[in-house]
Image 1 (cartoon, rainbow, N blue to C red):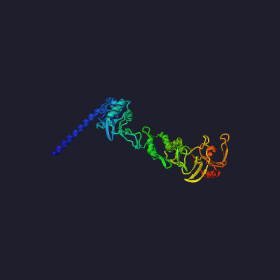
Image 2 (image 1 turned 45 degrees about the vertical axis):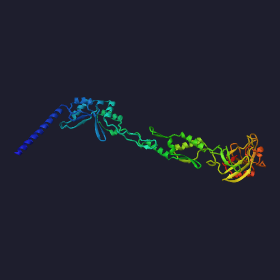
Image 3 (image 1 turned 180 degrees about the vertical axis):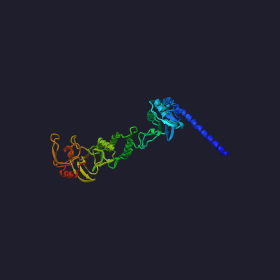
Image 4 (image 1 turned 135 degrees about the horizontal axis):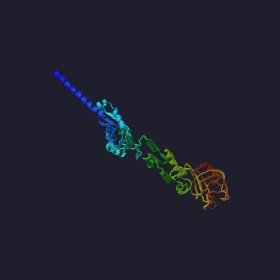
Length: 455
């Protein structure tokens, strides 16, 4: 009995299946033979399921349900952009799509996706941007260029998730004209920093900063030094974030050199001098002294800055002294006292020789110039002056000039006496006359540059 029942149930199931297949066949046959598309058919991003060719062309031309697929971090999103798109398709090409499907595909409802190039397509880019900006995820991070901050430190770039809509819309517009399926990965359209830490311009600026920070220019003034290093240089560096350039302003150089001159120049300044017989006196003038050539020193410094070189050096001088410091005369010098009519020569602080002398007559045009001078030459056997100009012409064996007035130390073999008050009535034309034997010995002792202190 139970076997009969099972047989009856089996027959019923078979009949139901056959009826279902027959129904499906009849239903799909109706579509297929009625020139309709299958229930899962898409043409050029438009769903034309169960539509006739004419109906399909109509909805495709109207871009009904035209959507684009976007992905972000692996999450997919379809966005309908039909409101911004107008297309025209050829009926013949759409018909060809319908005819290319087999009956089996209709029968089993297989998905079909066709790509047909529209005969014409128009995109309202403003409307498309509006749709995308309202539909796509809002950015969380803004991209930032790498740059140099106020401390001249490199701040790396930031990669954000802002979408470059101009580029995206351009690609969508181009894609619509192809009729192909449109899908885009948003990460491919993020606005990227223009300058990263690996950018050639950024790398160049970083190298320049490293070079400046390592620089050390030292101007020596005896035991004192004036230093130009990173702490000073960074005050004059300017970073242009837009152009990505680093510029060292150099207008300060002239003022810097001027300040050096005010601090260290001794040329023409009054000095305290400890004499042999008359205590400490103040002496003004003379050609000995430090005198910085500001123009040349500024050029020198700017050249070093441009080359980003470190160096220990001295300024360019117009005039020099023996040593730096308050006492720039040193301990080797010739001392000339006009009042005492006497000359002393000290070497390394010790008196080596001295003698009476005759200095210039106390008239405006003949008096010996007071000041801290220096020997700027030595010459043997020559004539001094001319009859036509100076009114005299004298031959000397030892000529030792010490100032710009043409005055110097020399032998005077035409004199039989030295010292006393001779200079008041029979003095020289400004030179310091010396006994011949003393002049010869002094000549051998002196070197060019030796200070000559006249007071």
